[in-house]
Length: 451
Ligand code: HEM
Image 1 (cartoon, rainbow, N blue to C red):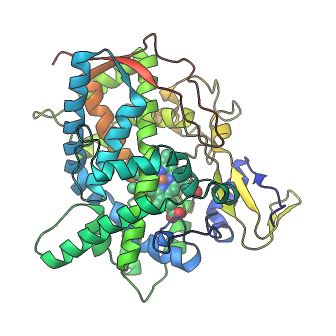
Image 2: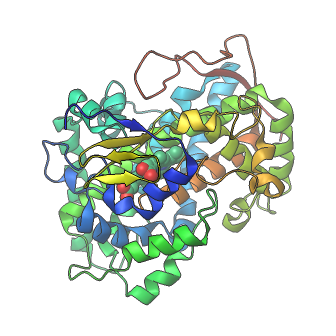
Image 3: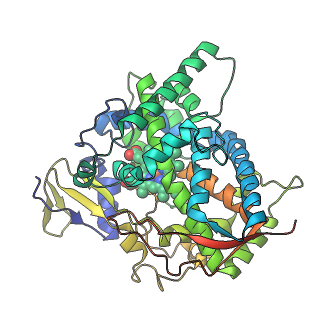
């Protein structure tokens, strides 16, 4: 098996068959990865088969739009602190390193919404949460990403676990769970530890209603929704997560939801700095959406077409260069290609290459949000735009990411203007590494708008 090459697949029809229809033959690639910590391996990303189905069915409703709506004020709180910090930077300088700035913000959001922990990430850099998160993600950023996305052989090579910071996060969640149990059910918390503790597998008919409530950032269509429903329509005796399973999910939300969101925010802002007309058009849309308190209601934010389109285009150009990967569990004949994928062989879908193929996206290097506007979106060939993956095993945190990024960008664009300055690298220069693209720096000019 060690000698079997990874097979790269970039054909949309085959991708659909593999990720959506026959996905059970291709569980997540991490199945066979050894790990030093039995607790953290119970996370969604590493589970497979019935264990994965059970946990995914229980956890999915914690990302429903109703739950996100309740969490909305938490994102807003984090944003208030972030903008206070940015105001300070704007008073003393005219440039901002987007990579660093959004890293701070994303840690705060994860600490608040997942770990129920309020940290002052901008002032107290020696806060234990921040230190441990950074320790895991500065040098270990690469390793963490490997833990989530990279093929098995690479992550084995990189030895993804960092026992000390793992222990810190495990202890943190265990402590919160203990406190919540002591306090009883009187008090309600809108964070993931609580949502995961309360999560209970619903009846199948209730699950059907819940799964209809999906975002259309990546339009999965009726067939895919139906398959997802069938895959998860199973009843299990154990309807709730154990304490260790709660910890493992919080842990994977940190791994999967931190780098992905801060890098997406940084690239989004970088593109706005380079494209002033697009920035102005977005500014106009957002200004038209503000209510009398200067806020953007949840329902309005989620339906702003230009904001959605600019974000989608930014994710197309900057998908992080990670291929989607799957592992075959049985020998599998690949359509009418004459190729048989052997059991144990890995396939990869090179989303970065597909997003930048002129075959699928005319003038692919042009930043053109118009491609994703409602009047054009249907022209995009299904399964060529895959920033959140596809099929039953796609990104469970997509809605969370969309809300975090949209609320953040909407308020930032209203308050600041971003522009290209002498330190802005065009094109972006990347550090040398495999699979993950890390810019050397992402600096733009910025100033506070007069309000
Ligand atoms: C812009 C932000 C994000 C991007 C681009 C992104 C992208 C992805 C991709 C490409 C996958 C693999 C999908 C596949 O193999 O088909 C994935 C899986 C996953 N993501 Fe995200 N993600 C983002 C944010 C988040 C957030 C905020 C969370 C949690 C709070 C999260 C949690 C997960 C989990 C748990 C999985 C594994 C799901 C499973 O195996 O059932 N992600 N994500």
